[in-house]
Length: 145
Image (cartoon, rainbow, N blue to C red; front, side, top):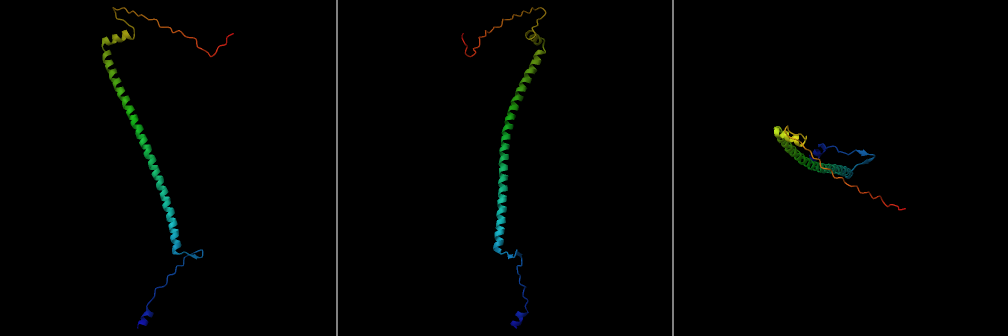
């Protein structure tokens, strides 16, 4: 009975690798070498891309820091000019208040425009300007006859 049982049992068909390349069958060792070579190239390519990204990040960070420094310097300069403009505006407003009076206008007329009042006599004394004597310029060596 055991003999008949073994004979009647179906055996699975044998699987044969029939893929051939140029007349040669590829073994598992050859496939592993091809896979490791392609993986090595893939990893080295990704490493190069990663390094390029890191370089780009560092360059952009340095540029941003330098821009921040220059912008802060510009902000400081602008605030100084703004403060100076504010003080000048305050002085001008004070001058407008002072010169809106009659006495302020008289002071401007006397000092700047050389004008006098109704009962006043204006005397202008010009002081002579000092004349500078020019020294003769030395021009190299002179020949004597």
